[in-house]
Length: 132
Image (tube, rainbow, N blue to C red):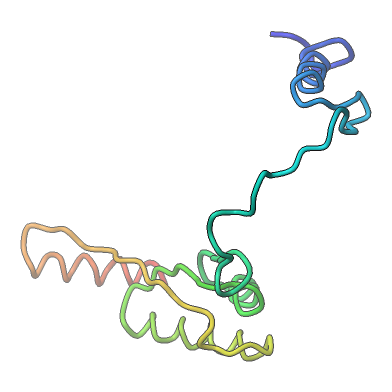
């Protein structure tokens, strides 16, 4: 293992990167400019920007999603939780001046596996109570 100081591993990697990518030591490009021979083979997306997903809820996450996200991945434990999260997401989008239907919510699927139907319902109920 080299050292990360002057003349160590970091310097050696920087020198190698400069040689590979055609940059001077200050990070400025050198050599000829390059251009693509033709336009991209696919049209731009309808929304004109990349799709942005935000994972999870919480007040900060919902405000971020309401302002910027195309979609939110959520893990509601019950239908009522999913509806409440969706409503909170729509409210956040309204506060940000967006159409609430622009922000989609994708709910995760969390199955409970147990030896019987009764045991599964009991385990899911106890997990839901301990998670809220």
